[in-house]
Amino acid sequence: MKKILDFYSKSCVPCTQLKKELKSFENVEYIDVMEDFEKALQYSVRKAPTVIILENGEEINRFSGFRTKEEIASYLE
Figure (tube, rainbow, N blue to C red):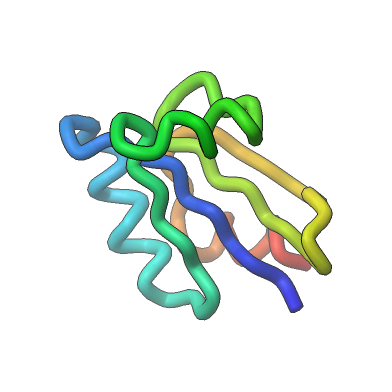
């Protein structure tokens, strides 16, 4: 099963826009980089927003910046 990790910051406008697009998907975990910076470091996240797609616990894809739900879906294929 695929899981989406959304690394965001509350003060980030593109993060807020991306969060709206991610509501179309199941199995999304939202991680505030300011509150859970250890997890951000663990995944080598350097900017927000960053989305990491995991399958069976392994990273299969990632992107930074805003994407539409159609673009996000292409990363899940």
